[in-house]
Image (cartoon, rainbow, N blue to C red):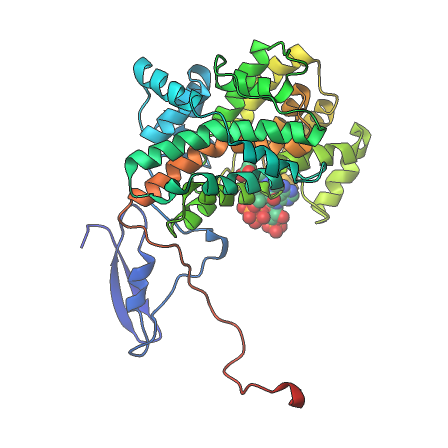
Length: 427
Ligand code: CMC
């Protein structure tokens, strides 16, 4: 028994139990011994939406929601964002350590060699309607990659896993760019392996008539935005990747589950929803009426609030500085004024203050993406590009964790007791 323990009395039976506390947690399975009669399943922990349940041990990302701290593998997000590139950050998340120059060069080169997708990927993208939502196309296309790479099911082989890791990092930006072009009816632009990761993606997205003049400030801003989205421990989409991956399906299928989860407006889809909200508000004068409606329970202030952060989201702070750099190049997004005023009012209003609701990563990111030339329904695709290394790192950590098994929560059954089936003629 470890030094730290919890002693509980089960008042149903009067029995005492001492449970070990390890890393600030008790094991839910230790509650099973609290049974009333032999053969019952024992006590369970009831925790809808995992409000207070750790589903894994993880060495990837640390968040202190009260202090507004986010660290990747121990490094503060502010320092990573200042000094690293997105590929360097991805290496850090996946390998656990910062790469040396040689390691980074080899990681970059491996990805560079896998940017092409099979020609048939283009064909099935063409099957989507012109107005198909980019996230719907993305989750379908990434899931379909498993049919092109059936070897990806050999998830126990680390060499094979590395290959799929590279394929995902290299091909998802290509698919994302093709989706952008599909929505506009523009011809697809093939990857250019003389360009860097971001430069290639931006070129595949925006090149017209063989030309695209890269703007280094905007490209660095995009690189930074991807860094800020790269991992966020056990959020909804990461939990989806881990949960689906725990059935030992291939990583393309597991990642497409993550994309599906990210699509929702309460998660990554919030960046699109913020823009819709700002459009609906229209002018600064309408803000007080909108705020009152939110407080009356008619909708949410999108881009505000977080399950873990109960202070300012450190990513939102960094994004505001990226916004300054971007708007200096593109001119101000006219909706910024409304967003700033919304934030000012909300941060003073007792409704938001008492619930500790602050702007999250999605509040300002959409304004920047829009200034860069991306339409609102595409914003969550950019979030996906950023979150990809985090999902892969968490998936591999889950596979290598001897404590993990197939994910399978319990339930409290609330349906009818056993009853006699009534044949159709007697209903
Ligand atoms: N606007 C108005 N009220 C809110 C909001 C909001 N954005 N967020 C939470 N609340 C209220 C909520 O109504 C509840 O009030 P009450 O106690 O009176 O019932 C209280 O605050 C606690 O909210 P909750 O829904 O229990 O909190 P949660 O941890 O389950 O939800 C959240 C977290 C992010 C889903 C939620 O804050 C939300 O819906 N925010 C808007 C959507 C959004 O911006 N999502 C992006 C999250 S960050 C990036 C990412 O993960 O993708």
